[in-house]
Length: 275
Image 1 (cartoon, rainbow, N blue to C red):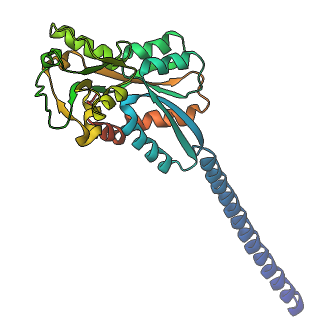
Image 2 (image 1 turned 180 degrees about the vertical axis):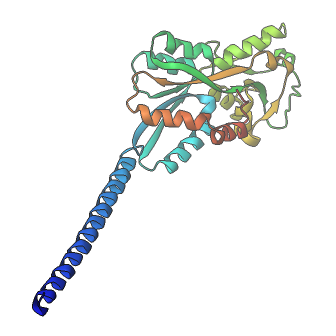
Image 3 (image 1 turned 180 degrees about the horizontal axis):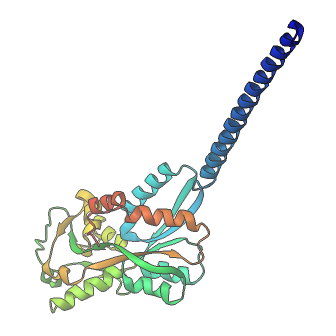
């Protein structure tokens, strides 16, 4: 082989090796690009799964303070969401839901009022009990009338307020009175527990039978008196996703927060009992 031929052969070998290197680099680059594309696609998918939109929660009046706190935490964890509450007597809320009022979640103060909704087929699945609540007597600060028992509320001249019997707190109060063999005629029946408590706060009544959680939420505005008959009238609180929920995913996430350890800590701090 001549010197010129050998030189040409070496040049071809070098050129072939360079092409191989270029192909390898190109393959790696393509692989990295595919990987990056997949990562980007994954991130995009994750972002699209982020919760957003408004959720409307109908909840018993006694849940106002704790649910407001949980709503604020939920919005902080999910910045693109908004939680709107409607608090009131569970029976009125249930009637609104069955009447077509737009809502995503219902948290009732008793299984009986939740049943109004489930019987109409307006809830999804089986409602879950997330807390329980017990009654307490709310008196004026310092308890000037020296109320120490449920029986004391039957004294002549004492102005006592109860929740309406159709409302869970009123039904529970009647159950406690029955357990003690007592009869009581209040100066008024109120449509929800906050209204009953407010009568004492405004000094329009001497005492009211409300929940422990409401006495605690009122702070120094009232004084609480426990009574043994309340153990016979503890209310279970169920929560459910509603059939016509406009934002079911966010609603489910809010229910999950309520039932989580974090949610239970907030509710327990408000005086609710574990389910």
